[in-house]
Length: 105
Image (cartoon, rainbow, N blue to C red; front, side, top):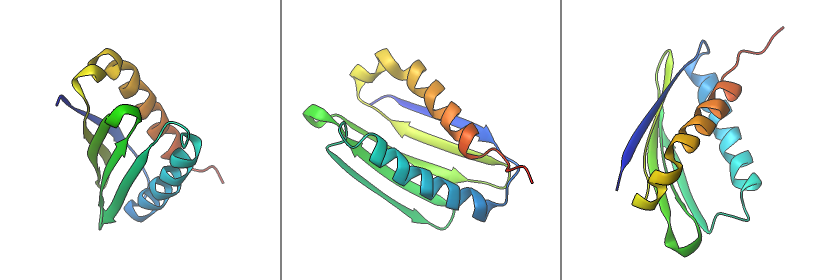
C-alpha cells in the first residue's frame, strides 16, 4: 500500500493539541458517518493510531504524532487511492491548520 506523510506546525501546548485532535476526530466520524463502514482509533500518550474502512473494504490506516511544535500524520491507503492522494493531503492539511489555529483572546 502507498504511504504518505503530512507535517503541520503549531504553537499550542501538546496537551491542548491532543484535546483538539480528539474532539475533531469525533466530529469527523460524525460528519462522514454515511461513508465510514468501520473505524478504530486510540491514543497512547502523544500518539494516536487509526484505521478507517470505507465501502468495499477500502482501508486507510495511520498514526498521528504530536510533537512540541509539529503534528505529523502518516498513513497508508489503497493503491486506487493514488488518484485522490493530492486532494486528500490538501484537505487533511487544511483541517489540521484549522484545528490547530490558536484561539484569539
